[in-house]
Each structure stands twice: as structure tokens, then as C-alpha cells.
Amino acid sequence: MSADTIILAAATLIGLYMAANIGANDLANAMGTSVGSRALTLKQAVVISIVANLLGAILAGGHVTNTIRKGMINPELLAGSPEHLMMGMFAALLAAGIWVHLATVFGLPVSTTHSIVGAVVGFGMISVGVGAISWGKVITIAISWVISPLAGAIIAGAIYYLIRNKILRSETPEKMAMQWSPYLIGGVLVVIVLSFIFKGLKNLHLDLGLGQAIVIAVPCAGAGGLLGRLWLRHLLHRDLKREDQEAAPLQSFFAHLQVMTACYVAFAHGANDVANAVGPLAAIFSVVKTGSVEMQVEVPVWMLAVGGIAVGGGLFAFGSRVMETIGGKITEVTPVRGFCAEFGAATTILVCSRLGLPVSTTHVLVGAVVGVGFMRGMGFLDMRLLRNIGSSWVITLPFTMVLAMALYKLLTLFFL
Amino acid sequence: MRFSFFSLFYKSPFIKLKDHADKVKECAWMFKRAVECYVQKDCEEFDKLTEDVAMLESQADWLKRNLRNHLPRGLLMPVDKFMLLDCLREQDHVLDNVEKALYWLSFKPEGEIPEELIGDFLHLVDAVIPAIEKLPDMAEQAIVYFQSSTEENRDKLKSIIRDIHQAEKETDHLEHELKKQAFAVLKDPVDIFHVVRVVEIIANIADDAQNASDRMRTMIAR
Image 1 (spheres, rainbow over the protein chains, first blue to last red):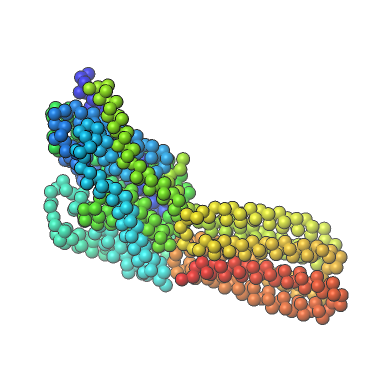
Image 2: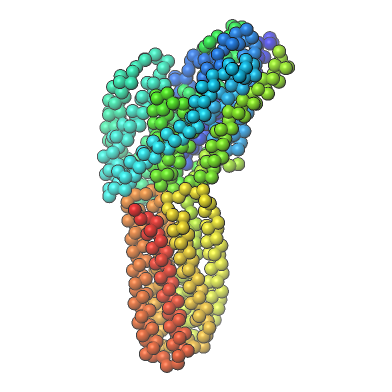
């Protein structure tokens, strides 16, 4: 077996480790509100997230990515020593994987993107020097700690406020839900279609402007909204005919909406976050193959697929146990609340990334849940935990930075 | 292992309020049986029932403390925390007064309630029971309302609160009648004092239930 094969096998293993951790932490959080509100059973959630995540990774994942994730350092600085870049990527993947693993064990939802970025910065600082880091980009990440939860809270809170005042508190919630259903379903579809156009389908090189995209999205949403209204009527009739009035028809309507947003969140996760594990892996492969340092690397489809499967596997192996305990425990997440949090998070991510603000799915989702809570909607929220979660977000960068530095030193010591 | 994102969602404290209310309701039946036993004369069961009520009271006390001790400062709630604690305290007073009424009866085991008053006396006890029995329903409906926040569930909760008010009004009326009769029928001041005191305590039970429901009404106010 040649040295190259061993390197590639080791890199793949570490990439899979990172991917599985991403699934266990990130994806479990993203699907948790749906399981908590019983819009999805545990099995359904696992299957949906694995399928949607895989589709997202293959169809919408970045097939070409910057050699160094998010362009934190200029790869040309390492042109003379491709083996250092390779070792750096090893160290970064491992450091990020260990951090996400630790966070999962302590039950803290952290951003996997921030983990890998922190690790890359750590490796950059030790290999090419502090000056080589684009600190502006690091600062935008720090800003996202504030922006993501805040924007998520405001948008999700506003959505809950609207639904509560227009539907829940009306004299005839079922009738009002009928009236509002085209707008709700339409709104969900607009967000999903716009996200696909702007982020998801960049592989098709459509290059549409905002105006054109809206021209496409609105009729889609209109048609979907009308269909949705018919479907809701069917749903309400069915539920009203049922013997037990306990199964509130409104709840099942929102549970169905929630399934839509849950699918979208899993798809978006596949599109954006699988690359956190696969991107550095592709960089290692490129160095081994070409023996030089490129600005950008191709990510082969098989790698995205394997990454997507590994993420799903991580969710299945670890996340399912976690979600099982929640599924039985939580009574406070109703479909209405879960829908508001998820839809609010999806909208926030779309709007903010369109405005060029750096946001993280995990941060936005936590913010959205709290936002619905502040509207007196989420029932009872233990805010003490927020401090722990917030500190884990801040610790992510320094921790992965230092760990990647140490690992990089060790690796170069032994192998170079 | 804990999972912080989901530990964010705190279990509704109204579930514990309901557990407490269930204990209170359990006491209501024992109280009724004890009083019926008392007026029948030479009843063996009375002491046993009083003891049982005391035991339930201490269990309910534990539930009360458990709720109070687990409402941390950092909890984001859709209701005022102190209103919830007030509601719990009033609910607990129901039990205290049930226990107190039985003690007062036991102070005069030979005196008993005069024949002329027994009918109205039992009537008063019967009138208090519905007020107590509605407390678990009220807590249950509060759980449902704070989950769904629909107008329909709010109306249901309001109607339970109205029922409790209605029961209290009835006991008020019976209390007056009984006191009036006590002065008309009884001659011995000690007997009058005893009957009036017991009647007042029993009527207070309904007042406590009403106070608890008033707190609930404030919690769902808009």
C-alpha cells in the first residue's frame, strides 16, 4: 500500500468522524422541534432527515469549494509546501470533530461551521502567521453570535404573534385557519423556493436576480397556497368527523406545515453544512492528486454522497437516542410553536444570507425558540441554559483554534 | 445525559398545580364522609378519617413545596410567577381549612350538631364539595390553555372559574342561614360558639377555592 493510499484512507476516516458528529449535533437539533411536537415520529424524522440531507448535499452542496474553508487564509501562502496544507487540514478536521463531539456529549448545540473555521484559523496562525488570517472574516463570525439569535427571535416571534392574534385567539380558529392557510403555505413555499434559487440550485448556474426570483417564487407559492387550502379543508373535515375531539384539527394542520419546514431545514443543512466535513477532505485529496496547492478544489459527487450518508448515520446512531428521550419528555412544544420556530428560522437564514449577514442555523434556531417564548408563546423556557449555550458558542472559536494548533504541531512533528 | 437545546423547554408548572389539586380533591371526599360520620353519632370511623386527611395534607404540602422550589429565577413564563404561587397557596388553604374543620368537630365529640341543624349542616358540606372538585379541572384546563392559547380553551377555563364562584355564593348563603338557626335553636353559648366556628371554617373552604380561581383568572387576563 502506498503512502498516498494510507493518507487518503486516514483522511476519509477523519472526514467521516466529523460528518457523523455534525449529524449527531446539528441535524438532531434541527429535527428536534418536529419530534418534540410529535409532528414527526422518531423514525420518520430520522428517515426524512437522512434523505433530505443527502439530497441537499448532492443536489445543492458546493461542488466547487475554496481550498480553505470560507477563505480564512489565502492558500497561495502555502503554495510552497502542499504537505503543510494537507497536515493542516488533517488537524483542522480532527480538532473540529473533537469539539463537536465534546459539545454533543455535554448536550450543547454548537455551530459546526464555526468549529471548522476556528480550527482552520488556528492552523493558519501557526503555519503562516497571525498576519495571514483575514481577521475581518473572524469578526463577522463574532457578530453572528449576536445577529443570528436576535434575528431568529424577532422573525419567529413576529410569526407567532401573527398566528396567535389572527387564528388562535379568534372566535373561530378553524375558519380563520382556512382563511389564512393560503398565505401560510404560500409564505413557506416562497421561502423554500427563494432559498433553492439563491443557494440550493447554484449548481445549475441560473444567476437570477432578486426580481426574477420573486417572479418565479410568487406564482409557485400562489398555486401551492390554493392547493394547500383545499387540502386543509379535507384535513379539517376528516378531523371534525373523528370521534375524539382531543386531536385538535388545527394542531394537525400545523403539524403538516411543520413537516414541510423540517424537510427544508434538513435539505438546507445538507446543502450548507455537509461541506464542513467534506470540504477539507476534498482539499487533502486535491493535494495528494496534484501535488500542488489550488485556489479552489473540486468536490466529487461521491464524496458529497458519502458525507451526506455519514451525517445521516451520525444522527441515526447518536441523535436517535437523544430525540427519543425528548420525544417522550417534552409537552411544551406544540405543532404551532414548533412551526413558528422552524419557519422563523428558515426565513431568517434566507433573509440574512441574502443581506450578506453571516448566520448559523443552530444559533438562529435557538434564537427562534426563545423569540416565540418571549411572545408568551413557548410556555415555559429555562433561560439559565441560554447562558451555557451562549458560552459554548463563544468558546467554539478559541477551543478549536488551540486544539488545531496543537494537533498540527504534533502531526508535523511526527510525519514531516 | 442532558441535551441543552431541549432542556430549554421547561415542564409546565401547571402540571404540578394539577397534582396538588388532585390531592385536595381526594380530601374533599374524605371530609364529606367524616362529617357524615360525625353527625350520625357513635361513629368509629371519624378519627381514622381525620388522620387520613392529615396525611393527605402533608403529602399535598410536599407537592406545594416541590412546585415552589422548582420555579427558578431564570424561567421565562407566560404568567406572573407570584400569581401562580398565590394560586397554589390559596389551593393549599383549602386543605388547611378542611383539616381545621375536622379538628374543631373533634373538640366536642359529645356535643355534636343539634338535630334541627343537621340537615342544613350537611347541605353546607355538600355545597362546598363542588368548589373543591372543580380545582383539578381548573388546573387541567390551564395546562391545555397555556399549550394551545386558543380562545375556545380560554372560555372553557373561564367557565370553570365561574362555576367555582357560583358554588362559593351558595355556601355564603347557607352559612348565614346556619348561623341564624344556631342562635335561634341553641341556648348554651359554648354550643353556639362551637357550631358557628365550625360553620365559618367550612364556609372558608369555599372562599379559598374562590381565591385560587381568582388568581387563575388574573393569570389568563389580557
